[in-house]
Image 1 (cartoon, rainbow, N blue to C red):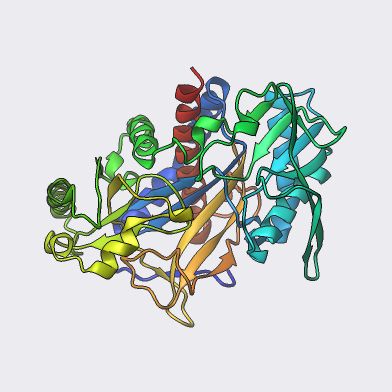
Image 2: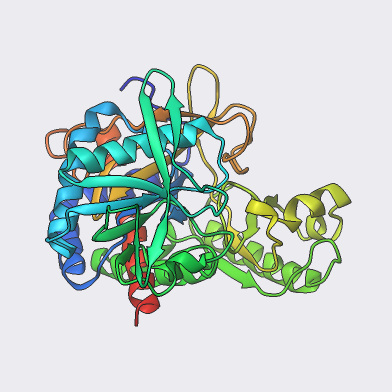
Length: 426
């Protein structure tokens, strides 16, 4: 396949066995997923970051407010239209009008390109859609031009009683593409319309550690279905509560968790005769945009952090202080782009329970144990062939098996997000 990263790790028989097992058990897997979707409501938009070590393939992050729709291959967009129709017919069949709420304060034209693609998908699925900002400084409609694409019209969101609207445009539902890192705005509190996802799943209140607790639960159930070790899908993790990197508060807690995880990872490496050196990723327990993330290979790296490193870890998106962190098993990325040796990780996109494509995040300036979501990254569409949820339908090649494995892991993470949804709306 063109622009397909190559798996270079020599110890890949474990992964080959995993991919073969998933493809051989695809009917059992799809039956299991179908039963879960009857029981749990899933978010409307989800993207999932996956790392492929050549012996382990695991989800490392799940985003419910994804940008990057512009990086999906255009051939997959018609599938996205069908996925949108299926979602709303399942959960809100009478819905006709939707307000889409974007990020505030963004000047990133790549973000607006992604927003334009999502807006267009909704329109072509048969909905009336408007884009409305919750930024209080937006007091009149504005137009964002997107070169060679078109333009977006963004209106100020209004509220009357418990209903939000744009002039006389009154939506049935509100879709958030704003992750609420800056808090839940008053204009959205206690509104009568349905909000997707619920406000409680924004980064004002959501924690990655809670998501991965649910992900761990789903992984164990999924692994039991296939009689496999859940470690092959599940990154080990711990959480560290009150921490202040600048004041060096909570450092002992962080050191203890890092030390524990490094030992636990080494134990699994020994069990499966893996020669790589264990490492962990310390990341902000809330928030996105690749901020507040560091790679740690031994506890001395925590104790000897310099001021620059502490400053980088002290705040996240919107200069929000980082007061708690997720300490997560590091998963190597042993997929590289052949022509420039860029490290690659797949990012899978879903609308409802349907995989609608995705892309490889690539970085030629980062090592295979580092965060790739950083300046210098670039993207290549994932070359899904045929239906994304089952690309092995007419193709039993190793490439197709791997893409199917990615679609399976993404939906395992989606189910974990559905668990979050149920807990948040009790």
